[in-house]
Amino acid sequence: MVVPDAIRSELRAHAAEEAPNECCGVLVFRDGVAERYVRGRNRLASPYRYELDVDPEVWFLEDEGYELAVFHSHPATEPRPSRTDRELSGLWAGKVFLIYGLAYDDLRAWRITRDAAEELPLNPGV
Image: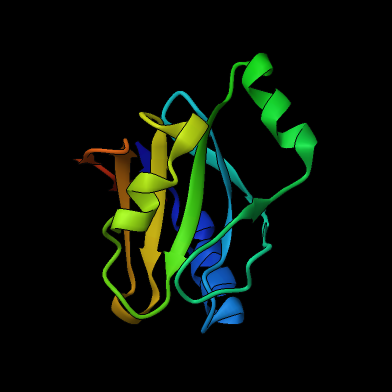
């Protein structure tokens, strides 16, 4: 999976703007390459948890052949799924999540379920 530098910059900027709270949104992929980032709002306004609020039209992009990945930031910790991330994976369990560790300037991809988290290869783009 590839996240181009321009989109990585958007993720970094969103995380910095929302700090100390977690930010969240949705990455839109086509053929494994992120084409855009749709900012969401963290309804919880919390540094430890997020509840994604995004335009409902985004979810219909899957019907058009796009792949979606939930994104959120960890303002002060590494971009590794927390126990809370796993427990709240819900309907997205087994799908791709991207986490940005603001304090570490590190973006990582994961397939998360309630019981496990598998890191996925993430490549920079142009």
